[in-house]
Every structure is written in structure tokens, then in C-alpha cells.
Image 1 (cartoon, rainbow, N blue to C red):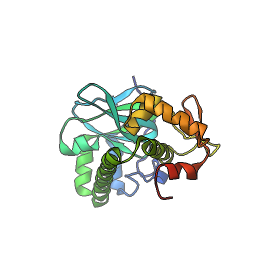
Image 2 (tube, one colour):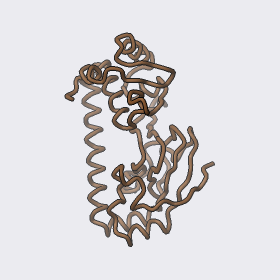
Image 3 (tube, rainbow, N blue to C red):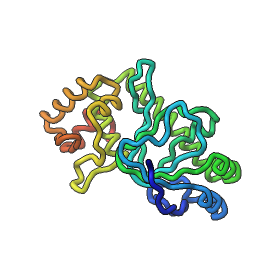
Amino acid sequence: MSKFFDTPQCQYCNKNLGDIFADTSEQHAADIAAVKKCALYKKGQTIFHEGAQPYGIYVINTGKIKLTHSGDDGREQIIRLVRPGDLIGYKALISNQAYTATATVLEDSAVCFIPRDVFLNVLLKDNSLSLKMMRILTSELRRAEEKITNLAQKPVRERLAETLLTLKETYGLQNDQQTINVMLSREEIANLVGTATESAIRLLSEFKKEKVIDLTGKKIKILQLQQLIKMANLQD
């Protein structure tokens, strides 16, 4: 069960990460603050389930979360990784449909919930918020199109290299400025790449033998960033 924590002010919550409510008017921020609830979730807990009806949106204050979709065969597919400052559950809310994904906590996280009616009311009145939501939706659509193209055209080796770079960009590096600041299982990495777990394990071992990365349990350290970029067939 999640535990509640002190409600942060929307206009200053994770503002350095580009929080969506940073430019919201004082009145609209007050409207949201008056009704939102903020809770702590432990690693492995589920915030919402695929197929459930949305009653609001969630804003990530701290922590890491994955959004997954179940295929026809029951296998889990990671469709998005979430970081502080991000929103989740907004597509289902805006489209008035059930959640198409399950939100699971990767590490202890603090998450705020904003009820449906209040969020939609502010969205209708606040042009800045409406524009940001359109940008978020457009950006997610672009990422989805890029992923489809990569799955169709890129070799698995290139996709793995690109996935590691994406993890670095999403969650940053630890204090050593080399270790990616998130720990995922080999199955989760394979899921992100779009390949079998055995293939991901083999390729990670190859990357390590080539001294491009180092592996310690679930920790991945990037030893040669430029080489990894080259392997991903990306422009620096």
C-alpha cells in the first residue's frame, strides 16, 4: 500500500526538469494543489493497471517507473520509461478510454495524483498547459514512429547500443559519470530493444568484451561513449 507525503507546490516541483505546471497561473496551480494527493510507492508496486478506467493523471515527483503493455501472448512489452517531471495516464484521460498500459515502479517513487475533472477544467482554461500537452502528445507519437522504424530497419546490435544511450539520456549517470543511473533486468533490456533475452545477454557480453561497457550485476557502465554512439549508428 502506498503512503501519502507532504504535497509539493506544482509551480516549483521539479521545475528544473521542465515540469508541465511550472508556468501555470497561480489560480490554476492553487486549484490543482487543493485537490491533488501525493503518495510514496515502493519498488514493484503498480500505480494503475492496463484496462482500468482513468480517474485522473499522475505526475512523477521522484523515482523511476515503466509503462508496459501485454501482448496477445501475455508477454510484457515496455512502451515507455518515466522519470521525475513526467506525466502518466494522460492519454487515457484525454481520450476518455481505459488505460492501454500498466504503470509499475522500478524504484521507490513519489507520485502525485490529480483528479480528472480538475485537470480537464484547468486544461480548458490554461493555454500554456494546453500547448504543453499537445507538445507532449506529439513528442510521444514521434518516439513511437521512430521505434517502429528502428525495429523494422536496424540490426539488434545497433538497437541495443541505442537503448543504452537512451537509458543514459533518460536517467543520467551516477557520480562516477559512467554508470547508467537505472538498474533493469536483462529481460527488461531485451524488451526495450525488441529482441529475445538470450540475444540481449549475448550482445551485452560482446559489448563488454569489446570494452565499450562494463557490467556489474544490473549496473551498466559506459566506458567508451563515442564508440557506443558509433555502434548505434547515430550522429553525435
